[in-house]
Length: 225
Image (cartoon, rainbow, N blue to C red; front, side, top):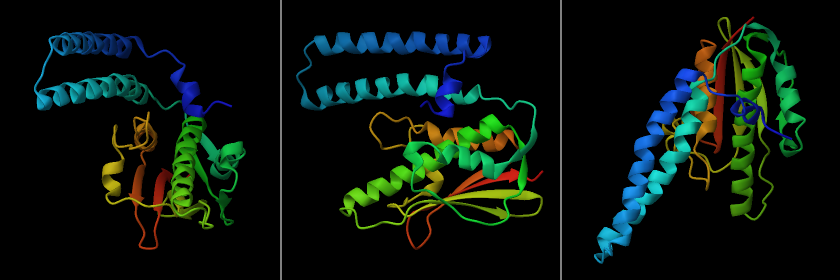
């Protein structure tokens, strides 16, 4: 089963962004080729050799980050409608990998927005919470760590979707919402950047907090219907 973001990534970029990405790849590919020439030149200084290896790794990381960044930039809001937020959440939690996530009962208000984009946002928030919980359970040899929860709060003409985990937490939650922040192998950190982009497209916000009791609380604020 594909994720909502994978469905979006399969779409072609708008022509202007596609051309811009192509233009940026030119000098990046040139830098990679010149780096290989330097490696073959037989550099013997250990520090210089390590610097060349680091440069190669960073160029490879940049090559992966560029298309991810453009995929986020290409996200645009379609016509907004009244959306049942709980239905969006329940749809995402039907995925086998989301088993164990609890939905807190209560009055779930409707929001105004793009249902497809909101599905992408919920997918990423739930996936992050699950991965944090699994990471903590592995480190503590499965000590029965509490499962993530999804709840909703009401504000002044706003609805806050709250996804809470009890994983290892974050030292600096504010720095987590940036491309390249992820420490997971093969990841670009695109998830939270995507959620923040979707929040802004709806006139909302994404905030992260590290409660004293542990874990992370992600709060997606959206306009109420």
